[in-house]
Image (cartoon, rainbow, N blue to C red; front, top):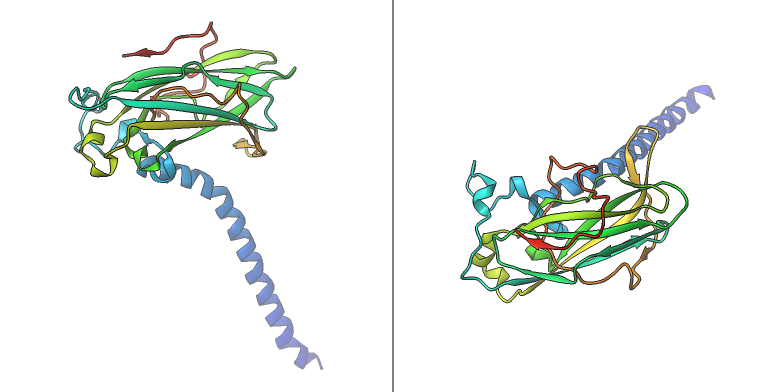
Length: 245
């Protein structure tokens, strides 16, 4: 009888190990897929994620990124508007300070958001962003912004968050960009916390987009500068005005 049971026992053990391996692999992939997806999007502009300015593929290999910052005066100005929202579990007010800006390809501009922690406790937030129309993302470059970095607001605190950006000059040479005169950059703030491994994790929930946190504002984009940090992305000062550099 034991000899008959042995093959079945061995088969069951193999099936159990195989199933366990699949489960562990799925868990590992789910943790790695978010940063991997973000990296791919920022490199390729896929999914409406603006390109990271220092590594933009529009120029020649080894080209100084500052060489891209030359306004194309023969082109039409592009109207850039922008939207802000917060998740339902984040008790913040998050609004852009400008309604819109109009920029030339290759022209830099600076814009600000204002965030207020309406709760009586310190809270960490993390922002994500996207660009529409999505095909503009490879040309939408942020030199500095507050996205994907920890933003800690003390109870009742209000801060200004700057975004410094430009639209790559090659925008005017791409036939797929023909007819595009308006671009929208959207930010969403999520409540975040550190897990047991010290990794910052957002806490997704429903998205709240009230009249106070969702107005049009202009500015271009790209992905966050590798040298920027949460401390350098926050200005704890009175409301600032948008300027064009």
